[in-house]
Length: 329
Image (cartoon, rainbow, N blue to C red; front, side, top):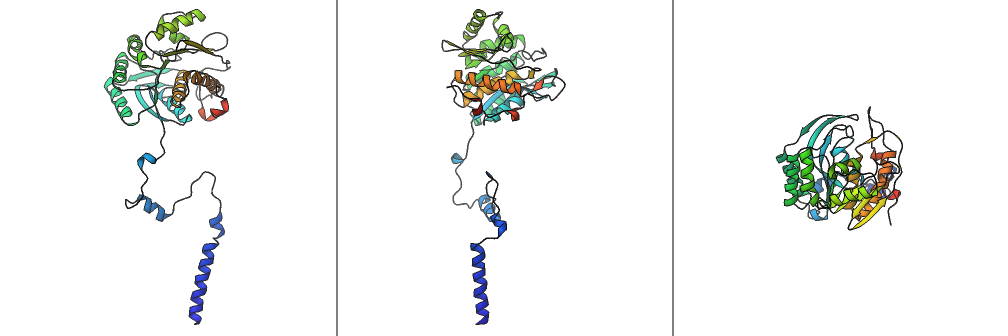
């Protein structure tokens, strides 16, 4: 009888400890951190005997955006910066490399061009699996690569294409051959939603010397005749306030900005086009996307950092959230 009483007392104490856990088990978890799985939970989740596996279609998904551009070994432009921009906007970035550059914050030292067939293979792989909802092009390098991309644009539906006509680097190094430029106008722009030249690039693309409103309209009209649906002419290279101008669907919009003092920022064309593709992927109408990206770029330039001996570099970790910048009505 005495032994039976001891067994009943032990059972009561075990029941009490389960009802009132020890102080260690009551330590609050950090906000947003999921509870750790027990070893038994881990084993059951990893076994094929799980009677209720999570359907693949029910898993959380992310929209993808494609960049077709060159690699910048300095990290301030090209593929490297495009992917950072996509991630800032909560999108999954996929990439197709057209060229590898040996460059730093001062200049481009060497360029290695990717063979056209390998560019095609990258596009095929990305498009077959990820189905990006928007895309952008940057440095294309050679005419043969432009033709390879144009052929894939005809074969595959690449939606919401933003073309950054990267003609030259900030130090003047050519990023696209003369014949490549002609093929871009003939074969790429017809598949694009919008082309995003600065003033020097627009002059090279159209042969028009831009010195005022009339010449801007003339250059935009020439570009629209290629089949591109919209033209956004960035105003950073003009004197006075940097006003961006959009021509789209028979209308003209102007987006004023403020000039930020300081040394130049590397990769602003890449940053702009990647952000514009991101906002289009997220559903912004083109005029609203252009206005928002204009404000965003002002913040990017104002918060850029010195990381080398030359131009400053964007640091997206220093930026406020998109919502805090304010959106157009």
